Length: 137
Image 1 (cartoon, rainbow, N blue to C red):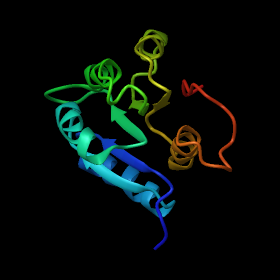
Image 2 (spheres, rainbow, N blue to C red; image 1 turned 60 degrees about the vertical axis):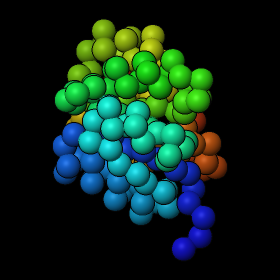
Image 3 (tube, rainbow, N blue to C red; image 1 turned 90 degrees about the vertical axis):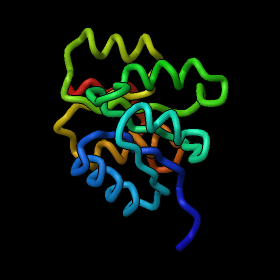
């Protein structure tokens, strides 16, 4: 197998969703690591050194909001691209994500193809369609 396109840390407390995201990204050629919540994300981010982190919002111990804030506040991780993945698609939630500085917002249920496109784009991989902030429409 050739070199991975980019390194992604997939963070979700739901094992089925975590594996769905991980497998889809692996099939696209990404190197994928996983974490079960925001706390484990912060514990693993230094060793994994991801290009992109996908973060579920609703998780135990430390939710996606808290993890995103901590990633942005840390000099070592503030440039990591962050995608929030959540069923919460209200305008206030999207604005909160934007205020924190997350790079994209994908709403559940999501199309794996759309998530892959967003991750490719954030990782700076050629062939990604231009776009940006996703609010689920």
